[in-house]
Length: 163
Image (cartoon, rainbow, N blue to C red):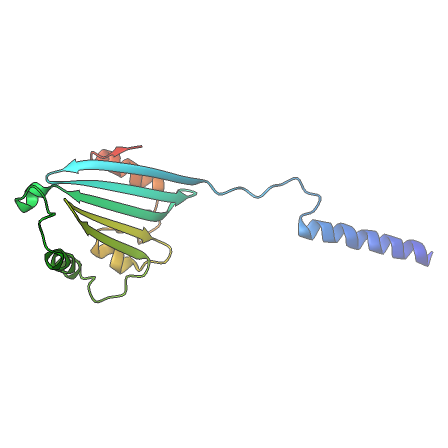
């Protein structure tokens, strides 16, 4: 009789353990859906390109590339600028954005001046400070603003071509 109770108790514990660990169930964890979309718009004197990456419709990374037309600077090419002039332009841009003397962890800023000027901003929304992002026109403070579907729809409504 004691042996039957022990076996029953062991079976009960085994069933309970399998239930807790999920063994023996057919449910699978739902996989994350990762999506990326690029939206571009020609503006007066420059081209804006946004690239969004999202997980389950929640934007996690934003990349903004702005390519300026040299006509804005009144020249055919910026390649004639000296390295010192290029560095001064970069410093002025960071100062005007209020980013020259602050920590902007999670926001990578690259200003490239060759034949033309290209600014590339890459933001990791999970670690970047929202007040810093707002300085560069990226307002992703609320969950609504981080909706991938909403961002794409708003961009298309603003005249961006998305693919």
